[in-house]
Image (cartoon, rainbow, N blue to C red; front, side):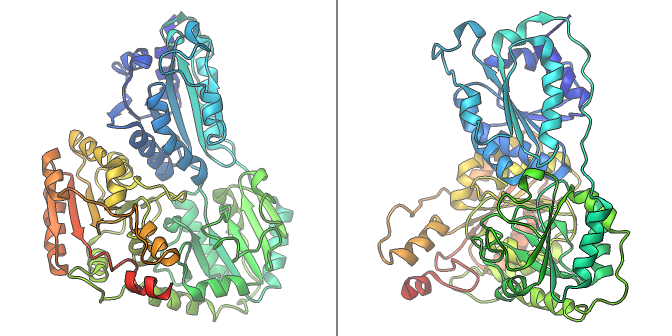
Length: 549
């Protein structure tokens, strides 16, 4: 006989959970009590949105569901930001919410929310457990749903009285992973398409990859001389210095790369959905009928033909597909082999940062410095904003599980993601990038890094504005500025107030020593870069954008 809280923890342990992120609440005290005697590490966060984003980052880097617990009402609604990210980014995550007691339901009780309705459109599955004896069933199913097909978030509502009830329930067993494999006939058809191709192109995206799958993809690219691009914020799926890498297919795409994709006769899309951002608003691949022959490989049959009609649809996870296709080799040297190195040369030119720009701080030399000193397994995280262009365009990702960034474009993600990454890989360097607006959306999670001695480095690019919005404002309504100015704290002093290390960079030459002091301090650190708001993009100033408008 066990309480519902004990059964929840038992089910998590049975499914391999080693840590969870939470903001505590009285609605699930029974679970917290059970965690006292558990091997599961409990990381207490400062806001539920940050906790959910930490769980998302863990799921993103491992492929296993990140676990998050929050309390009812405001706790749950705060967490919804992380659930939306996990849904759009196809990341496995399970959110547990303490709910009002059963006798108070449907009365608009204190902090009551109907979670099935609230999360119904931004979660893969939402359920409320009314009978504690069914906890092993529902939790195991949650792991299966979160990881199978197109991964995504599951939300489980836990009535308070259900968690304290004592019941006899079956022992929880781990979920059975579900894999989808390509058929031989589909692989034959792909070979035939490639045999007749003159300008093929590969785009990698989505989730359900792992380090072995990435290594196999390298071998496939080499064997077939294929140019390979990575979808928006999925850049850790291919080594950027590999001779077959052609660049990132995202916001602000290299024009030469965009032309190559549009002119391709066969596009092999593996794992991704090719949504609005990577498709450049559905112009690289026209919806619903692409100009190119499209081979779409995806683990969820529901995504095949959803937006684009593929010439060949392969219902398989990326890992299973590349494992199978590695055994196929071309009959001879492909006709396009000489062109592939040119794609890589174009990428290297595109990803070399400019050394000049307005103001006393120039981001180009800073990115050059980071490329020299960061180890290949360093994890970089970020939220959203123009500052992120410097990371996506100029950092050359080398290994799998080194990128934590939301394809949904959510601000406030970088700092909590860095906390989760450092907790997961304490031996690795973890650097978060954030704008001044982005950081202050979840900057309180810097306190979580301090509490658990997780020495992340947060680079805050401070230009005193909501930069992306200001840029678009000046483009569409030049000279009519409203609602985009910010007055910020001293971020270095803020870091010290939290118990961390703080640095301020006001000249380009200040950055290298400041970063080294931050990295060797042994504390969570903030390096504030005070950037001129004119330096809004790597190649254009705010004045140029306004004047062109």
